[in-house]
Length: 393
Image (cartoon, rainbow, N blue to C red; front, side, top):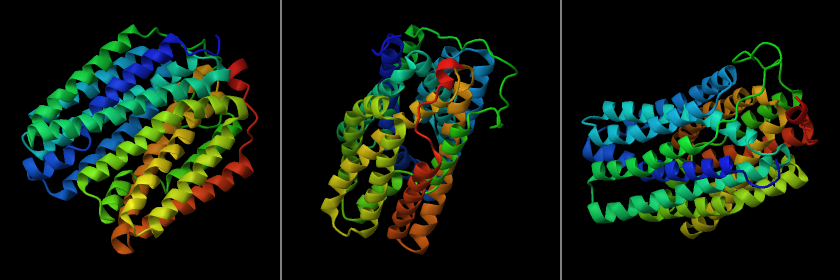
């Protein structure tokens, strides 16, 4: 393979664009639909999102392992995107908040099923020396959908008012397009396995650097609470709901614009340097949110925050892909994604407790501290020399 972006990677980027347009059209609307239309208590919103995200995290782990076991990626990728699209219809038909719980469960189950096999397919469809470029392009196109989706939601809210069910039905269209496009992606079967398949939760057969990187990832993620807290902080500092959503769009613009350059750069200078800079940016942004009392600071902080995710999201997946052989890649990516998801769930609960008991500044100060801890662990424990396992294993 050459260093050019392959057709598969480009197609999967387009798939993720449409899927994210669909998902982000719904994400900021669901809390309003639950509380205003269905009369659900606020605690129900937290229960629904907690169960939904936990489902995704667990299924990322199982789906990656299952994909390695059967040696196929595309059926699981298609099934995951199709489930997420169908969940939008479930939201539109919901008569009470438990039905929304079911719909969100199906949506996040779809995400959990597709993520690890899709990431393994991206890695298998690109040269190992260009993993950063491939994942960077994918994250950029995915995040472009996260820009378009909220903007479409704001437009439809302006046109339709509180007719949320129509917005959910509209979101079904890009979701279905994304799922159908998966059928144009070429399957890249996993190579013949040497030895027995990896156990689902066993780390013994993985490269030591991969295990250390999981430790770094956990240390960072335990303070990386949900981005909902950033939006709440923006509202706390005086921004309107619309302005807070637009600030979130600014974050996604930076994320989309820097993801591909960050991935390409990581191919040239190594992953660890980019990840370290990303951790530093995160710590600075979170410390600033802890200290600021001025609304205007939200805008530059959200823009800078987008640089952190661009330097860590696709680059982190590329690094995992470097550290494991092809036949273990989906399982390893599932472990990485699941660990991140579970840690973020605990981080969000802890962030909420700190917010209520101590104050908003405590939530962000804790996140800044764990980012610096992860940076120290990254520097001390993880060797940035490129893993040859993925190339020769």
